[in-house]
Image (cartoon, rainbow, N blue to C red; front, side):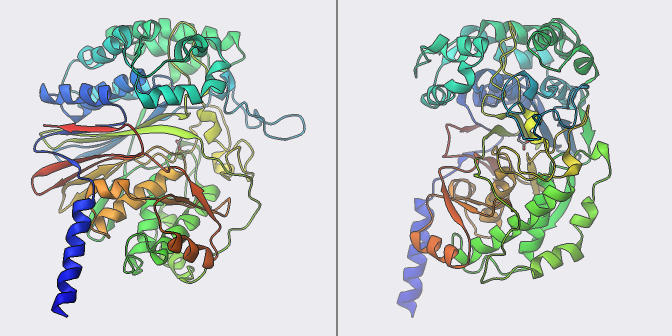
Length: 552
Ligand code: GLY
C-alpha cells in the first residue's frame, strides 16, 4: 500500500506541474483581453492610480484595440470592492430607445426579423461613457483626461494588428461589409487588415479626444450626440437626442451569498448572472457532486442539471428590475434551492420541455479584472452584444454600435434568433434595460479579497463563471488551470449539453448514457480572473484568446 500511496502522490505532483501557471505579482494585477489595454491599465496602477482608475483606462483602450467588444457604443457592469470593505455595482447597461415598442422586431406574419441583431434598429442607447464617468466620479483618484489619453493615442497613432484581431475582422466581413463606414475602417475597404499592419482610427481618436476634454457631456449632449442622432435619423434608427440626453448609469446593491464559507459578491438584475451563480452554487453545495473528481461524468451531470434549472427560471422570471418587481429572494430561498436539488436524478438527465431551434450563441462581450496595491478590486464586463455589435459604425465618429436590443425577448415565450427563450418580464418597452447574463463576481475569504472574475459569452457567461469558481474552490485547481479547464453549458432550451473539447470520449459517452443530448462546441467563454493567495496576486488570462495578465 505505501508504494501505491506514493505513486498517487507522484501523479498528483505531476498533474500540478503540467497545469499552466498564472502570472504572479506582489502588488497589483490587470487581466484583459488585449495586450495594449492590459499595459494601459498597468501603467495607471504603477503611477499610483487605483483599480477603478485603471479600469477606466482599460475600458477606453479596449474600445480601440478590441473592437469586437470593447466599446463606446455599448454598455456593461462594473463591480467594485474597495479596500475599506464597501462594495458597489454600477449598471451602465443600454436602454431601449423612447420610440422602441414591444413588437418592433416582428414582421406582418408575427415572425421574428433579424433587425434586433443587424443594422441601426438593433441598438440600445449606449451606456459605457456615462458608466465610466460615474465610476470616476465615485472612486477615481486620477484626472479623467489622463485616463482617456492612452486610448486617444492608440487610436491616433495606431497599434499593430494581432493575428487574432486580423482573423476576427476577416471572419466578420459579412456583417461589417454591409455598412460602408464599418467596411472602410474595419475591413480596410475590403483589402483586410493583415497581422502586423497598423490599425489607425482617426475618427475614433477625435471622438475620444472630445470625451477626454468634455467628459460624457460630449457623448450624450454635444457634438458626438448630435452626429450620432443625425446618423440614426438618416438610416431608420430610433436613438435620438432625447434618448442620449436622458441616459443615466445607476448604482445598484450587489447580490451577496455564501458558498463553502466564502462570501460571493455578484451582479444583481438587470443581470441574471448573479442570481444564477448563487442559485446553482446553492444547489451544488448540498450535494457531493465534486467527489468523483473534476471532469467526471457524474460531476458534470450535476453541473448541467443545476444549469438547466436556473435557465428555466431565468426565462420565466427575470428582466429589468426598474420595470416591475422580480422574485429574487424567492429564487434564492433555501426552500426553493432544496426543492431544485431534490428534483435532480443523479442517474438521468431531466428532459427540458418545449421545442428547440438550432442553437448558435453569438455573444462577444469582454471582461477584465484589476486589483491595485491598496486592495481595491474592479471587475468589469462590457459589451456590444454580438461580435462587432450591430455592424454599424456611426458616421464620422469611428465607433461601432451595439445590438443589445436582441437581449430582449422580441417575442416572449418564443426562442429568439439564438435559441434563448425569455419571458414577459424581458419584453421590450421604452427606456427598459434588456436582461443580461454578464456576471462580474468577487469572492471574499475571511472578509478579505480572494478572487475576482467574469467572462463574455451571452448565456454561457453564467455557467462559465460558475465552473471556474468551483474548479478553484471544489477541485483545488490553481486559477490558471481553473480558467483553462474545458467547460460545459446547458441553458434549459434547447435541451442540449454543449461540451468543449478536452473531456475524454469515455466521459462524453457516460453523459450521453445519462440522457444528455451532447453537442461539441469549439469554445465557451473567455475568463479574466485574479486570485489573491499567500501574499501573491495570481492573474489568469484565458488560453482560448489573446488575453494577457500583467502585474508588479
Ligand atoms: N449581451 C450579452 C449579455 O448581456 O448577456
